[in-house]
Length: 195
Ligand SMILES: [Zn+2]
Image (cartoon, rainbow, N blue to C red):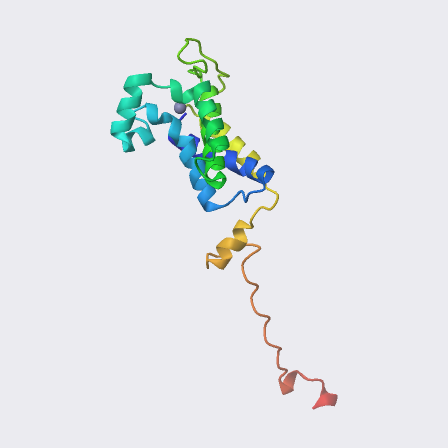
């Protein structure tokens, strides 16, 4: 999948998972970590978004293990489990990071290239729903994102937030215009009995 899709899926994974862990699903730090986790497995490809930014490391990982090798395997899942159990990172960092990482593997599983889950053994697992870069990919990602958003126990009112920022949207959040001043009757308009 493309990097943008992994970013969206990482955020969606955390939004769906956080309420079950008693964590705020829209916490900026956690979302950033989930997105980072969602991009991290492709460090095994020097031309991926994260690979280009961590070039010496991605060259090394690609040379040693190949793309969709160890970072996309059951060994990586074991590493995620270890990270959660060992306490090497605070849980508030490890949980979104792992959620994002798992979302990446699930996303790649939906492509025809699939995953070599039993790396270093050969054999590929896939549920080929969408080819990387195909028009179907953003559709699948958008559906997942909407589904995750709809599971949020309390969805922020985006219109109200924009309104607070001074960005008015035509419609419900636009302030109502003040009532017109009461009309003064001219003497000529009044009935004769009041004159
Ligand atoms: Zn990948």
